[in-house]
Length: 116
Image (tube, rainbow, N blue to C red):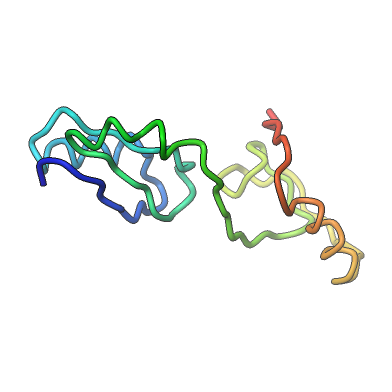
């Protein structure tokens, strides 16, 4: 492919830059870029612009992202995510209704501040 947009399924543990670097070698091109970073622990579709299509990156960036997740209540780690060392575990006394109410606060746009 000389010019175009390629939707790549990015697997966990790869950065968006890793995907671009791999494709740069495979496609033997320097003019290549992604339309928005996916977290290394996220997996999903990462649109890649190649050749003349790199001029469209500005039109494709800053679009909404949708995340699906699972989580474990009552566990604290040193990185505040699943990759860290567990510092504490405790039982959690709450019901499904309460959990759903809290989760609803994360639906829609909001400013996310990194915890660290």
